[in-house]
Image (tube, rainbow, N blue to C red; front, side, top):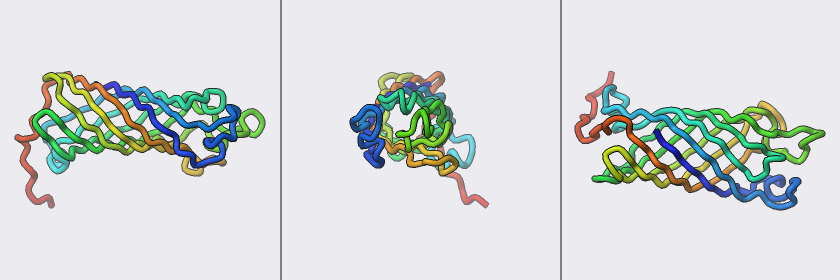
Length: 193
């Protein structure tokens, strides 16, 4: 089980973000609170052996663009895959991919929310690509630091659709409910046919 906090910077890719909004100033900051449920098996299957004992699971995040009147507080549900890059004694570096959907937007409306030309509909995609480093504090507890690129858009299903792009550092606290798998004991699979 993991708790994560992101505090990022919104990339100024649209006029709405640059200041053409009801705030009358650029939207610069974004924060998100995330809970994750993760699994990490000790190489039971070939795909886990190939990816050197990755973690995978589901997450739920609540975002804040510091403009609730025009953007709202989007809620994301997504799948997670963390692939290890390097492992040392107590330090591990992972690439992490999140993909899912986000809702609860105050989206574009020609009468009530005409300046928000970034999010055109109630649902968007949630995409998060990043790197996380975890340090083992105890046998059960890890502290983590990360950096990621976050994207929200609806893929053109609703217009307008400019989307939000964010780069964000994060901090994370992860608690292992069971023993951590020993990746050193996992042997690479033979030739797969």
